[in-house]
Image (cartoon, rainbow over all chains, first blue to last red; front, side):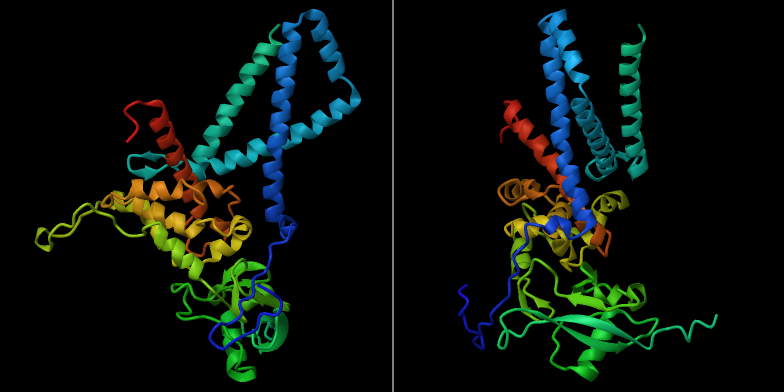
Length: 138
Length: 253
C-alpha cells in the first residue's frame, strides 16, 4: 500500500479509488436518496412533538395552553413547515418503494405495483380522513 | 430527412488509461472514432483498439447483452457498452471509465475476484438433501413455480449493480446486490431446500441489513432483475424469521 510499491510483472499494482465523502453529490439520484434518509429525522421530530404535547395534556389545561402558545411562535411554525414537506416526501417516496418489498400473489399472478402503491395511498386517505373527522366534527 | 449531412463524422471518447508499469494513477486519454448511427460504445472502443491504439485494454465477448463482460462507466453511469449507443451520448465527448468501486487492473479492466468470492458464498445452486437417481426422472416445476423466481434468474453477473451501489463503495465487505438476488433466486425455487443456510449467511454481518435501499442497482440492471426488490423481500423474510425464533417457543430451531 505504500507509495513506493513497484510494479512487477506477475503482481500488477491495482489501483483502488477511495470513495469521496461527497459521493452523494455525485449524482442527483444519490442526493435524493440521502434526502430521503434524512426525512426520518423529521418524522422523529413530529413524534417527539406529539409526545411533548401528550405530556402537556396530562399536566392540565394551563400547561396545554402554554404548549399551544409556544407552537404558534413563528420560528417553530417555519420549522414545522419544513418538517411537513420532508415528511410528505418521506411518505410518498416510501409508498412508491413499497411494491419492491411486498410481493403479493393473487391466483398465481403477481399483483401489479400500482395496485400496492394505490392501496397505500388509499389507507393514507382513510387514516387522514378519520383523524380530520375526529378533530373537526365538534 | 436530410439528417445524413447533420451527423457528426466522428465522436470523441475520453477513456481511462491505467498502465501500472508506467503510472501510479489512472489518466484520461481522448480518442476520435468514426460516428455511425448503429454503433455502440463498444464498437468505438474496438475501432480504437484496431486502428488507433492497440494497447487499450478492455473486456468484451458477446456484443449482445448476454455475457456481461463489457460493463463500464459511460458518462458516469454503469452500462453494458454493447448496449450503449453512441447516438444517445451526442455530441460527446463520451467519458468511458472502468466500473467504479472495483480495483483497476489495467485501463478499463477491473478485478472481479471479490464478486466471484461473494457469489460463491451465497450457494447459488439448488441445494438438496439427497439427489434423486436419474432413473426417477427430472424435477418438475409448474409455470407458476418457475414464474416466482424467473426474474432473479436472468442475472448475467455483469456487476453493473455493484458499480451503482454506494454502500458497496463505502463498505467493501457488503455481499452486494447481484449475489443476494441470486441467493433469492434459489430460495424461491421449489426444488431447493437451502434457504435456511443462505439466511444464516445473509442475515449476518455484511449481508442484507447493510443495504439501505438506494435502489440504483435495480435502475442500472440491463436484465431487469430488480436486486433492490430481492434484498427488501429478503429483509422481510429475515425479520419474520427472527420474530418467530424470538417470540414463539417452538419457533427456535
